[in-house]
Amino acid sequence: MQRQTRREPQAADLPVDHEVTLARTARDGVPYLLAPWTGRVQRVARYVADGDGIRLRVALRPGESMVVAIGRPGLFGTPARKSPHVIATDADPVRFDGDSLVVRASRAGTYTTTLSDGRTVTSVIGPVPEPVVLSSWRLEVEDWRPEGTVAHRLHLDRLAPWSEIPELADVSGIGVYTTDVRLGGGAYLELGEVTDTCRVLVDGRPLDPVNQLNPVVDLGRGVKTLQVEVATPLGNRLRVADPAVYGGLTRQPYGLLGPVRVVPYGEVRVR
Image 1 (cartoon, helix red, strand yellow):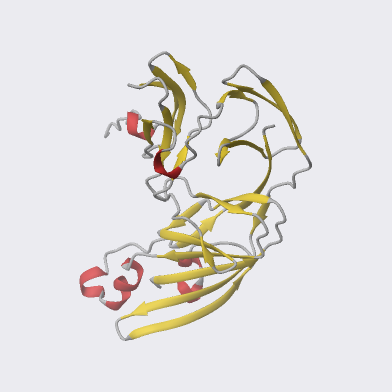
Image 2 (cartoon, rainbow, N blue to C red):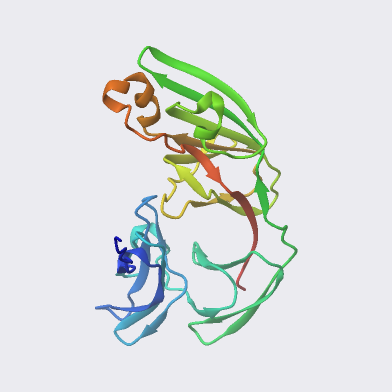
């Protein structure tokens, strides 16, 4: 009888959610978040400055990274004035919009925020719609074959891997999923499971690159048409196009698997 050994989780397999303290050489130094996926830089809105250190929260999924720089106010094109930052809040994310603070929440309510200058302020967020699962999509696929490309057009009442859709079972290529939504306010898009790389377009406009380890993007406001473009590996086509070499490959579940959710939020400036 073969004895099976249980693999203990490694540090890289576990999420991280704790506070870290970073040293700063100048008393007026402030933290900036450098987003590796988008290339954007934003001033961190919530932290505690304690002497020569800055204490902030780090929350990461397995495999994710976070890049924080500490420098003078005004770096990376941000406002040069050192306005108050947030020490604590019961809202969801809080961010700088210029030199103003904005709190955000996915539920209506009154939220309390404590600022670095000692003030405590309340912010009221009005009604926020419930999250919506997007299951109905129009799918256009560019099927890559040795002799050229073939187009497939389908209507999906539910998301499923291409390996479970007869027309796409052995297809590799690019699929564009399209659906219509009506968003007056802001919302996040949670993509769920995607194989392999993808990008999101809102009303024909591409958004920032998607973090494949945490595929959640900010849709912004006033969305009408939503598209998710998925590019797959070539394995499923190769296994049937050249079975002498690739016939041993297992058919893979390509495509947008979801579940895909739109999660609305409300936000208001801290006054």
